[in-house]
Image 1 (cartoon, rainbow, N blue to C red):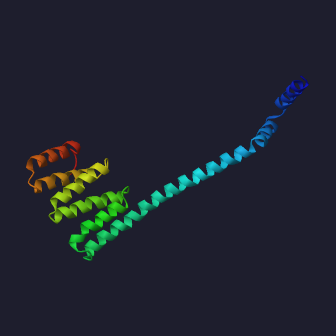
Image 2: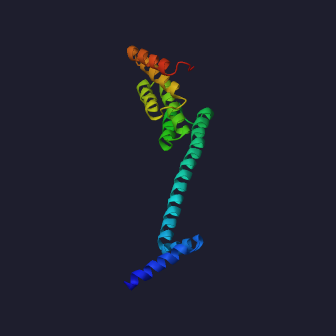
Image 3: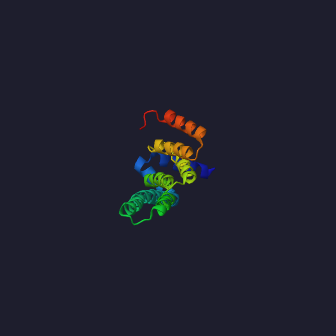
Length: 172
């Protein structure tokens, strides 16, 4: 009984303390948990920062990789037959970047130019699947239709051209 009276008096005394003192008592009581929570938040923040930094670096590195392939084609350093492979390597190495998307489209175009219409169609269709909403979608849809046309699949090509016009009525 005496203990419950002492506890009630202590609770009353704690309630009468100023807010800063009550906060100090609370922090002193839970300092171990607070340090643990702060540590977890710091580690989580560092992990998130690293992932964002890594993603940004990948975007940055993709541009020069694509430019290097394009420059080697202009300079004549890369044989024409290996151009599509070089573009596909950039697309494979940087799949979630703008340069990776552009590289995939350029690879498909190179395959079409080389007369590999089936492979070109597959790459154009891959672009359509993987890069929904990309501003180059019209070119990819046109590539699918042109590949089908070049393969002699006229009915499918007509359907693909109609889909292109439906999805991109104002496209060039």
